[in-house]
Length: 295
Image (tube, rainbow, N blue to C red; front, side, top):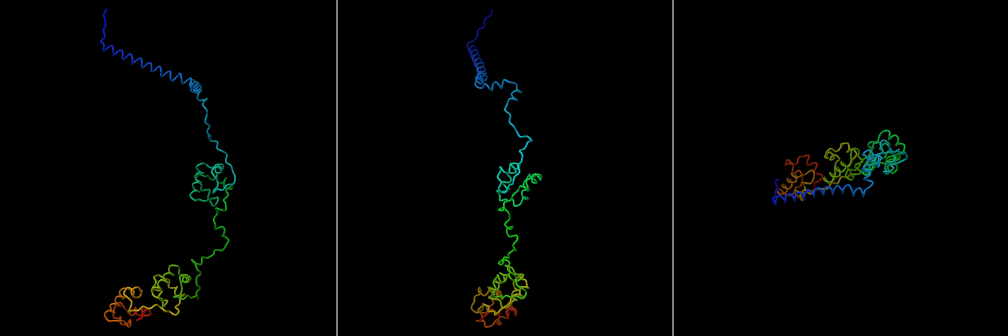
């Protein structure tokens, strides 16, 4: 009979493996008892349910009831879509997302002024609208204010739209303000301001023909204007500087420079005829400038 002898190192290794094996199996047994034993004791009802067949557990589980295909019956009663709350709108049979759209429309300043406006609600069918239309009540607070005066004759804004002159009427040009000028047929606020401003630049009108110098002014407007005792402001041609002279519409920079150069070379000017030799002073220029010059 043969005998086997282990070295001390081999014996230690075998002992370690045995200890590990015992620990592993002990852990498995302990965990199994923990899952089955204590849990069953603490949750008796659940363990009984778990022990039943799957199909039996399904029938015993509390049922969650859903409303499938059976809608809540819509109520019918008068309502104002501008003030109705969500509860009221839901009772009428509208969907929650439609109610949300109504609230969003009203929050942005939207107003239902007529029952027909409610028909624009997204998702509302013609059948639903026909059923709801007889019950829509729009408060008078939300109706157009124009309805309060619809039977009254329209009042004319005499400031913006003054009564126009008749064919035989006339206005004195140099004393008329913009309100008076706007009474002329074809003249509005723009041309009325242009007439007044140009008269100020000239120093007063001496002829209604000067209105032709205003760009695009309706020529027929002249027949309603007259000149009465013209007294234009005079320009002292021998004292004013170049900057002062050039502001007048009939002089400008080049004529003003001609005048100042002539004064420097020849002394004071006694008549505009002295400037005839200059190409900037034609016969027509001298004639229209004459009423505004003094020496």
